Image (tube, one colour):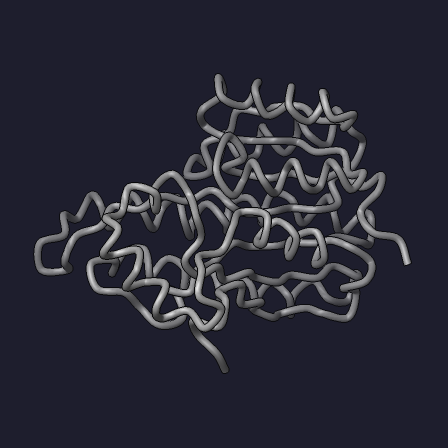
Length: 248
């Protein structure tokens, strides 16, 4: 069965980190990748990286929390490539603080980007997919949306919401051969986690049966699988990419 070769994929939050890895991995597998981010200047480097490896990509400025920005970007992607078959909702932020001290604006901002952004992008992309009668929607959730995390009430709530939204979406679009799944990464090596103290990193790793943090490519490979024909009977699921940190 075919993978993702020739498919048009849109990856949000693609300027760096896990989003960049997803975009590069899909491109290496033969997908045509629209990379979207609010940091438009950084998108150029991702597009150039993909092109240098023989892939095909284009950058699109998008603020996932702004409905007009989302609608325009997805319209531009569909106009440029003639279709949109794979949507990877990866864009997200953190604003950590104990719940008792959390500012309302930090709650609202995280929900707006991490959850409402997924809703807006999905809502804008689904009509294109319905006409094609084929699509893949892949939402990046988090282990903390499944088990919670002190100091991350906003983030945990947003990612738990993404999981619920994924399941609702899967039920609504299944009749048109569109699947919707979530990936819940655990402790993944990123620029943010590299700033942790050695003591905290060791403590985190002791909770992981595989004994190490994950890599962005681990998440990207899971996305590539869910985007492919091989995953055509998987929908409404949450794929844990956490080294065994949370099972069941």
